[in-house]
Length: 127
Image (tube, rainbow, N blue to C red; front, top):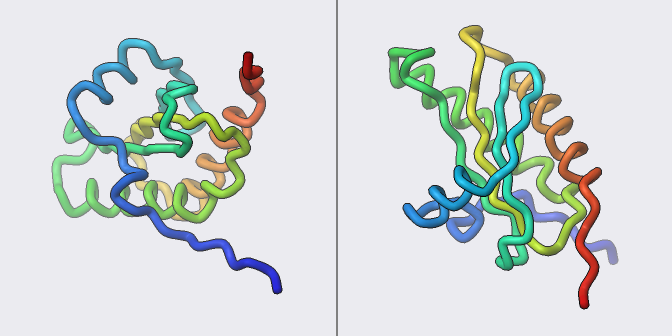
């Protein structure tokens, strides 16, 4: 039988904690795709990808729209995270960066591009 992929986003896959976030922002590498900026740090030693999403209040004053976009970002990641190939772990911050409200399909496609870029980074060899 084929094992089904579980599309979940448990607590242990969410990036939280002041030290982890400040370490990501200080030592991480930045990039962007249309509509989303991202910051990532490889080789965290956790063995899994941890994610944090952000939608600035400067772009959307109403919490309803911010929460909608955060849900879309998390859902896009949740549905595609299995295609990330590295096993050493990543910390990833996704920041929404456009004033237009992107549809779920556009966000899903942008997150797919981010995952492609992360997969292109060579995995370090073990000593």
